[in-house]
Figure 1 (cartoon, rainbow, N blue to C red):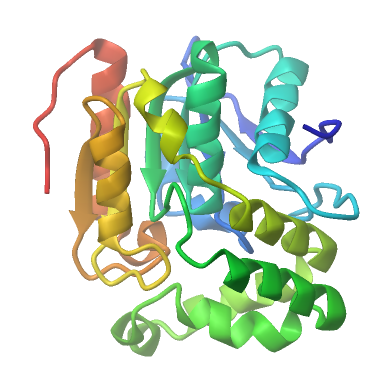
Figure 2: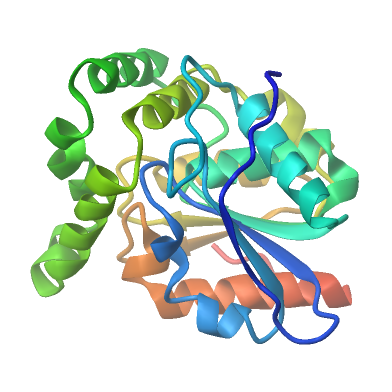
Length: 269
């Protein structure tokens, strides 16, 4: 692991004495990703929404990163905030980091929810090549292509302002060096060997129309983590929390609050 960096983060205090929930964003997005869920989550948790390296004001060290580097950044953030154990919810890259944390720092993760993510990308060369393109040409040439995979065509047609807003964020609030370093982390990641060691109650959410991390990849995670549950959100692409916000909010709160109370839940497919 490299030396951890000091991440930018928004901290909402929530109700007095509330447990802490950490939110991890997907690659190329910032805290706007959780806007639909925050009003509900703030009623129950002290919410810490952090930004990956090179995202939303977090520093972007030069060179390649690993998932261990990005997980170490989160642990440093928690230590700086004086926070011990937390619930963690992450989308895509944020979910990969959550799984790494649950496997390598199990005393810090009491409940885990991962959304539209994978334990191993099938085509590592794709991510290495993307990192090289971004270092050479920046993010603007990729923005339309990347954001186009985050939403279904029908959602984009109904709400064209939403993909446009996420594309603007990608171009204005994400440092190409940080984005490229995170691409290298995804390319080099294989969490499959450590998933059976995860002890935190885990919910895996997949979007039925997600081309980036299809439901079968979520099923691999759910089978590997003991007692994990899989929930497939119909009509959702990669950013399910935005395109199907009500379903994702209910799934998250049910899992996180049920886990905190020790309530068993049915497996949803």
